[in-house]
Image (cartoon, rainbow, N blue to C red; front, side, top):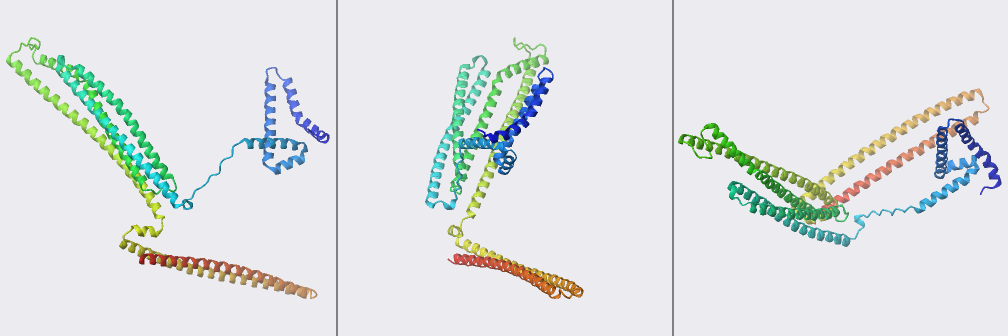
Length: 484
């Protein structure tokens, strides 16, 4: 509720705010009856409310803006308090996000890390066994499907060749058998793919975990998943090739009938008197027909051989391309995984590397490391000397520049003071003392700056000496480790 004083303050303000609205209302009532004035009134009201709401929200966010507005318009204080109360209620209803805890590998216990690695290895071994079993079942189903498709194609060809005596019931049974094998094959393939995905997920989670990322079994599991996946893809290509041959043989009957009609037409073109139905031919006509048939058979046989060779070559090229692509992908992933493990192994201490290496190799590596460390120490020492000389040179140049500047200032001030003393001898003692004070102050400032520069140079020199001593200690430790 507003107090009387606040009401007296708020009334003129509210009337001042409401005047534009009343003006808009009068304009809207005096305009046409089509509703254009109402639209303008709604737009003006919306703009006003949006501006007021934005000002209240910004005032709750910016305290300085709020204080200025309250000083200019004290009646807005209750509006700000009400808006701030609504914001506090909204924030209290919002769920708070749990803090993210970063777990460092060094902070974990060695027994805990070993336990996690054992759990990961057990899970990977179990997943590999399940995946191998599922893939083996899928391979058997694929081979059964391929065999069924080939049997159906062979029976279909035989039935077409036998014409009226063909065993078409056997062809139907073979087709049903092949379709049954295909359904079982698809089901087993889905299960095998799911088991491989589960294996990859376990390996991926172990790779992303901070305390199991260096486990060597992860690489083996990922490589196994790639190989099993590649085997399923190769069998799919073989099954697709068998289905392609079967589709070609389903058109075998139509092709045979068409070839027979073409052959009869060709014989009729050779001799108009040849009648294949009545078997009335003379010796020359029969001989010509036989020669033509042989030539036609040879041509068809050559075409068949060429088509078979071309189809087999395409299948072999597709299988080889799939194999090369899969092997390249597997090699790339294996190489990246080995590089990652190599980088993680490089972070371990020198003692663990010495325990797994050969003595001679360790001695050579230690010697090379010592030589490299000595070279680094020599380089650091040379850099230290160069930096020290450069710092001393800069300090000397700065001191000389400061001295010249101070001497010039002193000469100028002394000269000016002498000129002043010539004009007024009465103030001579005061001016001389002022000059001496200025000279003493500039000299004290210069001495302080020089001390600071010398202190910084000494600190840098001390830091470099600590680095050199630390490097020498590491070299001595490495020599002791190599001797041990």
